[in-house]
Structures are given as structure tokens and as C-alpha cells.
Length: 331
Figure (spheres, rainbow, N blue to C red):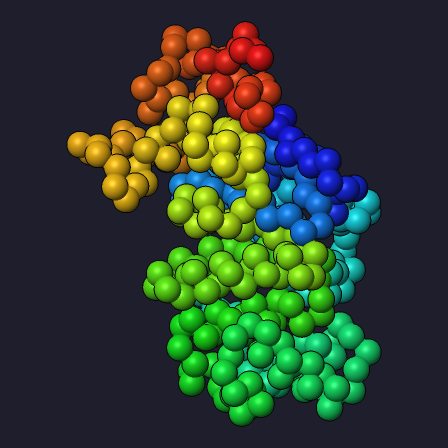
């Protein structure tokens, strides 16, 4: 079990030994395997890894949006000290949106094309806050201004198709913030956007944490976005955390061979390197996760024991690393 520690305050979110699996005719397929972490107010935690690593499933579990045949099969999720993974749908709905907001990759899946932006914002605000329609509309205009929508008093009556991709994503962020949530799950919020819009969205997320003290879980496969945005980073592989630590430490001195491969694949301006690092092979399917360390078939530093012994995390040079290379501790 790997834990993300923070000494700033009492954790806002605590995840203990979370496991998620899918029911199939051949039995349970494990997708997330006993992960643990915590998050405090105002902190940005990045979760990075390849497609299929379990990043989005982890975020979906926190906001109670795992659909059958997927289900939580072990562990607990605590928010503000109260367990939320065992709540019924209606109880979770009252928390989702009001206390926990969500931002998804494609804004068109979060916005109803038949309703104006204003209607969607005001209805969401009125669902979670005790405001009349005029007050909710005023709040909605302020939110649109906060996320950088020009002429918000006019654009509020426009439909989603009248906004660009970057502007739609800003509207989705406004929707996520309209009830002043304490935690925001941002699942690939910049992937479909061009680089300049990416930078603006990242700046918005950082401002959100700085000004409102909101905690953010940023789920992405882009290490470049992680490096300039988050306080801590968790590198995920085949449903487990390979390495967790302060972002500057993980980026500059990655310890796990998988993390080193990810970092080596990022182009560095001005760096005199003949070629970028390539991680051979592909992440295994859920039905074909090997025993021992799941990364060992692709690992350039794999030892014979890696194929049979599952590595447990060890605290190495300020990070928690699950790798047999550090079995002796090194610290």
C-alpha cells in the first residue's frame, strides 16, 4: 500500500486500500488494486499513467460514478472524515456537485446541447444552493467572468455549440465550481485543447486552489501538464501506484524504472540527446496482468525475482516507490 502524506492539515480526502473490479463470465478482473492516498485543502494531486492504468476509474469511484459491471470490491473512501463509498445513489448525488465537482475531457458530454449555458448553470446552482432564479443567474454570470468568458452577461444566453472548445471547457469548469465544492476531480481536462488553451485552463485550476482553497485531483497522461501544475504526483501502472512524491522530485529524479521511462520520453528544449526514451511493449490487459511486478516484462532493469515477487512501497529519497531495486531501503 502506498500513501500520499501531507502535513499541511487534516486530510480532506482519504482513500484506503481502494480496489475496483469488473464482473465477467470468467470471474472478477481487477482494474484498481489496493491503492491508498490522501489530499488536503488547496493541494493539487496529479495522477499520471498510460491509458487503462486505472486513473479515470479512481476518479469515478470518488464521485460515485462507477457503472456496472464495474464495482468497488475493497477499501474505503472518506471525505471530510465521513465514509462516502457506501452511500446510496441519492445520498451521493447530494455530495456530488455541491462538495465534489468534476471536469471531464470532452465538454460536449457534460453540457446539454438543447439548453443555454445560463439555464444549465442556474439550475445546477439552485439544486445545491438556496437561491432564487435571479440570484442564481447573477452567480452564474460572475462564474463565467471568473473563468474568463468574455461578455458573460451576453454569452450566458448562448448554447454550447456557440462556444469554441476552449470556451466550452471553461463553462464546464464554471459548472464544477458553481456550488463552491471543496474538491474537484479533473479528468483529462486539457487533452482535447490546443497548447495555448491548455495553459489557460491550467492557470485557472491553480487559481482555484490558491484563491478558494479547493483541492484538485488532476488525472492525465501528460507529464508536461503534471510538471507545471501539481504539488504531488502519483504514477499509476496496471491499477497500482508505482511511485508517489513531490512533483519536483519525481520529475527531476524519478526512481521507478517506469517513471524514468515516462520522463525520458518528454522532449526537453535545448537538451543535447540523440533520441528520446522508448518503453518497449504495452501495458497488459486486465485479463493478462502478470504475477509479481506488473511492469517487469517491459522493465530494462528487471531481475528474476520481479516475475514472482510483488514489490511493496518503500520510502526512498522523499518518495514512495514500489520496486524491488529498493528492497534494502537505501535511506
